[in-house]
Length: 410
Ligand SMILES: [Zn+2]
Ligand SMILES: [Zn+2]
Image 1 (cartoon, helix red, strand yellow):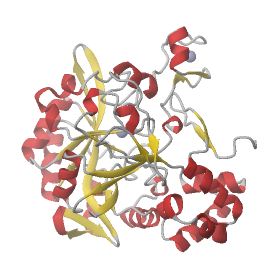
Image 2: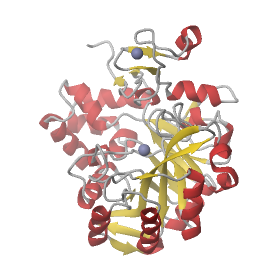
Image 3: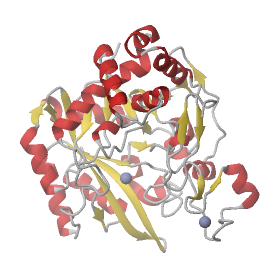
Image 4: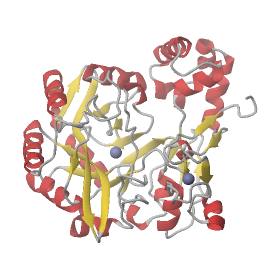
């Protein structure tokens, strides 16, 4: 059997806009261990203060990675490109990974010269065409990895309905083959992505985009092969993925189409019947991920087959995936309390300590062992989650959807 490691490579620091204040390398490492994740991205390597913090705390490890306590780190950042193309303003986020601090310094110097305000936002805005930026990064270090982030979200994504592209070629031109992967984002899952030709021959990866340490791993990818920078690059280029763990895509905050302020939510059947203009305010609706995938898809939905662990298998050669609900969310619903309560935190700690990690609890631990620690009700919640026996109300226009394990109890 090949070695497998679980990775979450879309992470932010406290210096990125709208993130929590308590993000530190020790906090990230502690939560990664608790979740069962072996490799994290540092996030935000372009931010000088965060970079100094990372540099102070991590130690170099084999294969151009770094460690803190039990957790491995890869140098990673998210860049927000805003540029004109084809007479339209385009906005898209790119995930970038590099093998050394020396390369980080070169990229930061380049971005600085390009006028980016790196000390402002941990996810800096770069006024360069995504193709030019990718080309510059690959020229500075050919081993660098560039992956379009949350590829489908309306406002800041490669395929986004508001300011994105219809195809990878259209954006990256001759550099399209250098893009090894697409990140699903919370509002889509691999099966949705497989319907689009640009996903052929590319890895479909899932990461958390966590804005606080406790949200690490709400999506994650299990890679095959050696846990090194080049091992990861090879896995990305050959779809060397054992599986991905996914949010229910309906739970993502841009899954359906709609207007949050007007309380209008449309699924594709609604937009087919009524179009994409808001019946309340008359402005265009925010076209969601489901609609956008439908627009760019060239093939119908795949029939998925679930295995005994609840992993969904699609076409030959594509890695399986499964939907998971974060443990704190399951506990909150099972125990009838808020997610951030002491009760949830106590049971969460008891379970993850007894079983070893959150993913151990969610995916593999015998339900009887869960019942012993947390009671029958929690065990039943895990059983329902594993069977996919959940009701999901779709999110739209920036509002998260809601997953219910006991939809009949209100
Ligand atoms: Zn982003
Ligand atoms: Zn409206």
